[in-house]
Image (cartoon, rainbow, N blue to C red; front, side, top):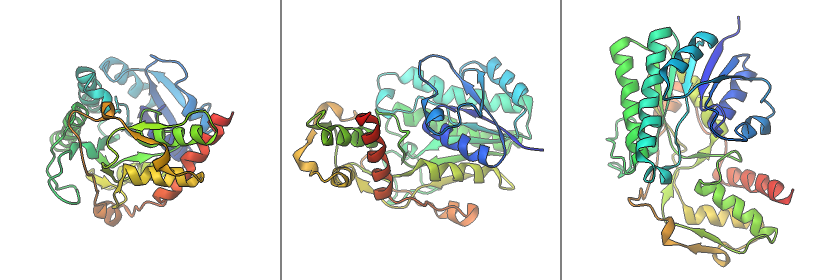
Length: 322
């Protein structure tokens, strides 16, 4: 019999790539969909799988709807990817971020505990929990020091996952994913903001890219690679916590240089630093140590940053051009 999976945040970047991965493995894929906005399915359509998943009405802040989704889908695996995921917005919407990213994760854990404790649970944790870094390279033992309401909310969800694993014996795992991008990334995120601007500048539709802290360093990988790590966590004999990263860090400045160079342009001719895009509390450097994921899961990233940025720029050239 084929296995089934229930995904919150199925219409997001990671939800779309994870759905494609699971469908290819023969899963029946169900997704929880909060119907608050239009054009929510574009990522699933972009991957050609919109008609292959089953969408269930539900909301991370409505436990009853999550219980109904569990009862309908009867999942072997539950992936909680739903979140208010833009760090910058979390200062403007701290309570919403706490409710969706923190309490929402707790609601999914409760639905699993109530309906099927045998289901394997995955929580989308984040490198933003490390924040003001306490070690040069961050791994599963590095202390957390979140620097945004987003990071604080995600830390609650992370510890709730650990607590439900230890309190109720759930097979519950957290993937502490460092920045992962793709052509499906939202336009508000810095990598996609850059690649979209590069496409528009190349095609003569704008002349400059206004951006914040270009000296911030991030560990960037490809979302299509990272969802494989999510699935591998749920296949282990026991739940656990895993850092998923490339192990390399790059400045926003250098990422811009890669993107502009891909279309034969010089970033310095077009990039303008604008202080209005700086965060109230900045995370200057993030650099993950994925040794445990490589050792235990057999996982390693396949896509280089240059390949990733080229993929994103090419996708945005097609979008802007059409």
